[in-house]
Image (cartoon, rainbow, N blue to C red; front, top):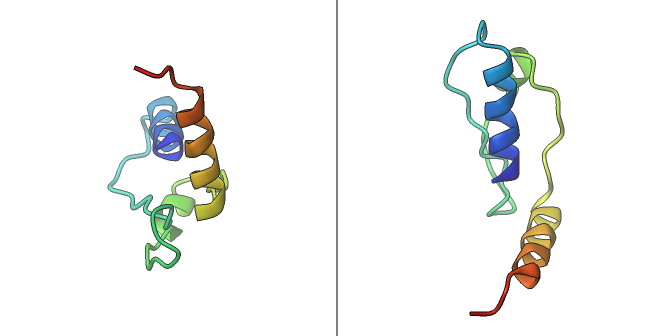
Length: 68
């Protein structure tokens, strides 16, 4: 999710660029056929997390949440 927010903020800061971009890089699966070339061509260059990195960050976030 944090990557989707970063992409949205990038385009908020660059309103002259518009379009529909696939940001499904496979965080929830180990294989994806998402074509990131249009996103890269639009100027978004930041790297995306691997599945392992994304899961680790999510688990860390979960551990930090208060127990209800």
